[in-house]
Amino acid sequence: MTDSPHVRAQAPLAPGMRPRPTAIEIGSVLCGIFAFVTLAIWGFTAWPLPWNIVAGIGAPALAILIWALFVSPRAVLAVHPFVRALVELFVYAAATVAWWSMGQAWIGLGFAIVAVVLGALNGRRRLG
Image (cartoon, rainbow, N blue to C red; front, top):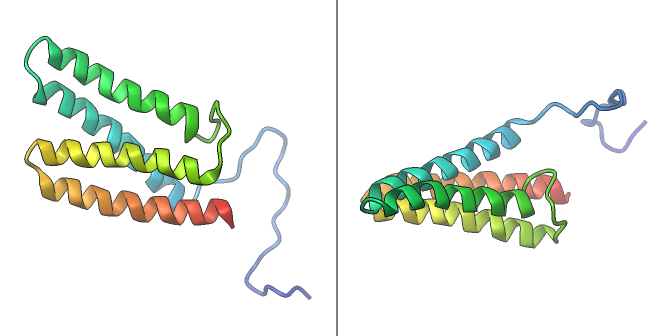
């Protein structure tokens, strides 16, 4: 008998297979996509022509590059989990500030709350 009655044994996965993503992981992915789209919208609407094209493409591209280097499941650079969380928080904060600068503070606040809660839950799951 095990000490944890609520833990079920799972069959090992076949080679090359991954476990099914949880709702928290799916929510975190959606928050990341929302942040990248937000930065694109901000870049295209907050700057005059021709800078709006540069900012509209450059801001999300830079955020995606930073995400791929530090935060993604197959990150290029393996860093401490707290550094990973800090980079993730930085991307979410950039999206929140972008909404505020566009005059949509409530959207920014709502996104910030959802992103921080999902990030904290996902981070706890990764650590423990």
